[in-house]
Length: 495
Image 1 (cartoon, helix red, strand yellow):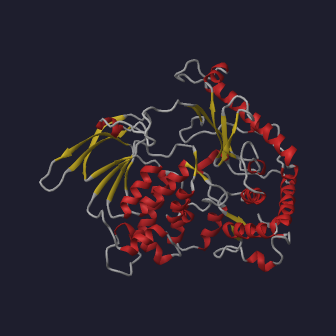
Image 2 (tube, helix red, strand yellow; image 1 turned 30 degrees about the vertical axis):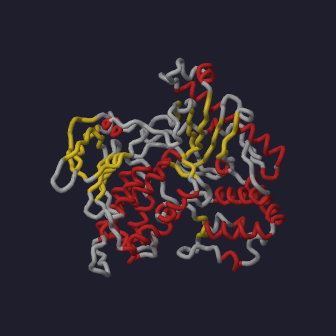
Image 3 (cartoon, helix red, strand yellow; image 1 turned 180 degrees about the vertical axis):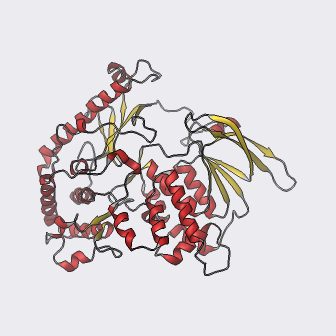
């Protein structure tokens, strides 16, 4: 066990370490390892007995890269067939990693919006104009960049003539891309082949462009509806990291996540909320969903008609700096409205709807106090060697917290539950309502907790598995500032 994380078998332990090894080697975090990055693997005959076996895992479109999925499949099979040899091989690889000097990493100031991976930069020179625009679209991660990239892509696609005269509706962009490149989005293809459009003629509004709102909008569009999404923001600013359950991961793979987010699920079972939103936004644009950014819900009412009932939706423009409605209203008519604007839904409040728990309980459980802090991820070797704690450590291992989870993505992401008296003792808050959080004291407390976590990792790995151990430098966290969110604020909070 590592920090309360049970592994079911010795094979699961080896696979976990092997998966982590590939993730560490992927310097650019783009799901495609260069041949140079894999040199240490190629030199060992246990995994690659000959040159031919290495060539089998090379990317079919660019042989200067290794396909990470093919490499993982091969490595997993080898571990299954020779666990003893695999364990020794992994020990050797980790020893080599610890002997390396830290790499220069990437420009962490760019964080989520950062420079494109080497894959995009190297491969674009060999692509045609439409293909280049498609790669730009796939690599964009912010709303403005995605919108601009799609606009350029759509303009270029007007030159592509479809091989059929039938209307393609939400599948026009996908069908045109399909004629020019080896692209497959199973969910799109299934709906296209069925010819079914049960919502054709419906004009639907979706309130909220979070992951749920975007996924709902996409499904409605694929079923033939004209979909409009309204959100009071014009950017993706949430920095949380989500665990992806198997059903959710399968759904996103069916939606072509591997095309639009190359490192999706390559080494991990979690994803940043902003990455997820960026992925779903791209799919929505391909399906002709229309977006109304900086538009806040204000009111809705029924419109009686001899034919059918309609809804009148009133939204207000939001000032981007203040986040407050400007008073400029927009009125549109829709067949139906889907409210995906969160637990404090303005739509539900307007309609007088009460919350109902899915478990049937009449009372909410006692609330826990959570602290979230994001530290800069320099993407250096020592960053990638850090051990995640996805299932959580408890107060038995980490004093000061009730439970702690650590995940690695665009940042080093820690979320922990704490007692109120701990926050008050450290001067983070002065009252039970968590008002007036002292940001300086919050960072001091967070740093104490991550140092305790690091000490526990060092102890466990030195006592139980020295060959796979990670000697986290004593000044590691001191050299990593608290990350900033897209609005330039320290990415830490209490709630």
